[in-house]
Image (cartoon, rainbow, N blue to C red):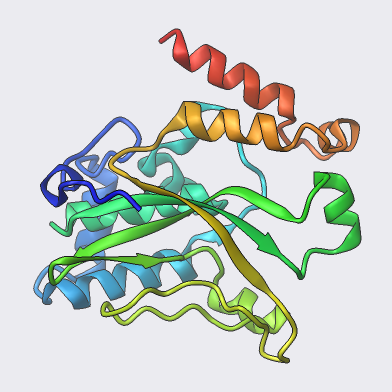
Length: 230
């Protein structure tokens, strides 16, 4: 994967608003800033993994992808949790970037696969911390509670090696494959993500998506087009 300059992965952006007051307040409440860099990264990872609930829905509103909004709401899907973790880590002076992958989930029910039109979760979001001179990937998507309930292997991060979802469940059944890594990003590539979801979920059941209040392929395409004009 590409390797951005770590110094460019410390500042705030409109999505990764690490300088927002609520991000700074949360960081102060976690009391991590007196710890070394690796310990800060581990503590922030565990906070986002376990304290921010997973929400399957991928919104199309740009404000929903701002770290401060995600923190205030207390929930988000993989991309949104990754954005929040990136903002908190940058606020704690840790170079942190977003990573996007296509991930096959063998545990999805037949009903979900039919709904999505695929068993691949496109542009799945996670993060990369720059620690001790290297980029280390970490996936904070699944909470400890959810992992225990579903029998998934808990993703645990120690700050020294990649922390990704398990190949198998606790029972030994197939779980996840990270099929493709798209790269490491300094900021949220909103158009790229929206267009990927539009293109790759064209076979999804749009009627059921609408009934469930979920964004459809057309919604994602419209969001990408609108953002290009801003």
